[in-house]
Image 1 (cartoon, rainbow, N blue to C red):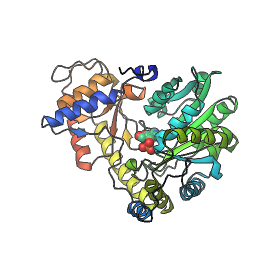
Image 2: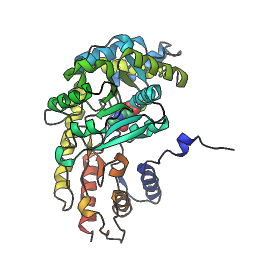
Image 3: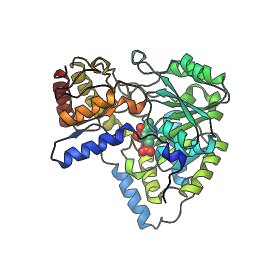
Image 4: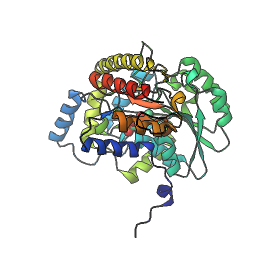
Length: 400
Ligand code: PLP
């Protein structure tokens, strides 16, 4: 008889699952649901990637790949790291995985023992605590304040570090808040980390190219190269190159960590689809011009969405500086009652009522460890974004 392992049975269900099921149900019943819940770029993958994948298939590049990644892709990643991040990495410091998510999975499986701690500034992408938990780890959440632009306070990070801390996770530009870190933030964090030499640092830079108002993402390693033997950069093709379905991510870190992650991957997947790797090589080597176009579009949508949200009484909305999400706060609306009589007891109840009554799907802040907020994705058309904001306004104005 099926009996799940304890690590699965005790895994919390993300708040998103019930919402996605409800949205499907409403759509099936004929409702015009607008979903702003997905972190999926609404652009086509670069045609050079599609063509390179096709050519690789025709050329017979269809055997098992090397576990760490094909040589051409490892070389393209090394060139990208130098070009975009000022990071010089040897070939044995780089590995390719099935998306950024598997880089994180490999890293945590390779390093986390029962009772180890992972410090995660909140709000955070849902998967860090869940993956850590799968390996017996425990996440220690450090709330970031909206007034600080959702940037972590180095003193709070310092206070969260214990002898059991294995990792600090830094995801900037941040999903869901859109916060980015300035050089001075990174310098202050580096000071804290120098005093905690047992802590490894995961820098998830998957949204690095999606920064607004002329700002640029700065890598921790370019500010504090002395931390190189403890930093794992997580990145991938999904967001910047609109290649979510290709499942190509990569990690760059100290050689012994990368070797351990390769050992995990060798026992899990034996490596990444060869055709997807050929596509990733072509996309990376084509440079960043295509990304600039998408970034400009996201920036325009951000301006429109934030302007629309700021007009709605009861919402607060910090200006996201990167990624493609808005993260408005709804604290002054919690405890009130919707037009159809639903009690808005927390952000999960709020998001459910918004979906049921206004047919707009969002993700409640509870999923990201910091509420009451809603996450709205800009990966949607201008028309859908404008209509969604209009429906949110009507919904909120009717709250009693
Ligand atoms: N890191 C962050 C912050 C993300 O938001 C995501 C995807 O949503 C990932 C990593 C994983 O990306 P991938 O599709 O490459 O696994």
